[in-house]
Image 1 (tube, helix red, strand yellow):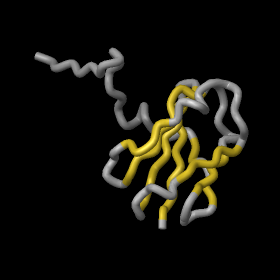
Image 2 (cartoon, rainbow, N blue to C red):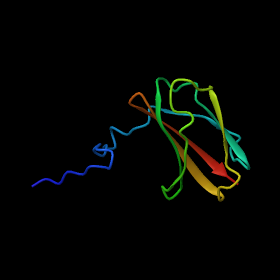
Image 3 (tube, rainbow, N blue to C red):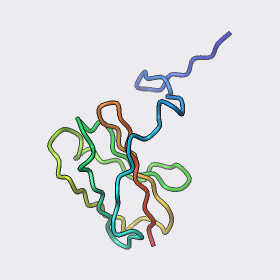
Image 4 (cartoon, one colour):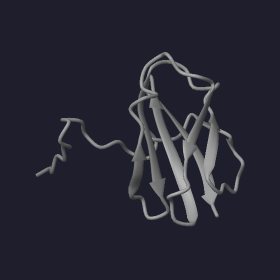
Length: 105
């Protein structure tokens, strides 16, 4: 007997080795007060997902505007409404996973 888990989009969950980040992207200023800039220059291919998670793993922002090939190498996000704490940015592009971490004061 085997249990198969499917998400709403039909995909199966990934294991830890499959979800290992390809690269860590720099974010500045860190710690941030009202905005954070993330360097996307090492991201290749079409951006399929761009999400920001708080330290509990709750998605606090999902950005559809950067999805696609047309994007700047730097992306500035407003974080002035975020509570103080640590945040993780997850980007999926062309089968690769990129991460960035920043602190909101």
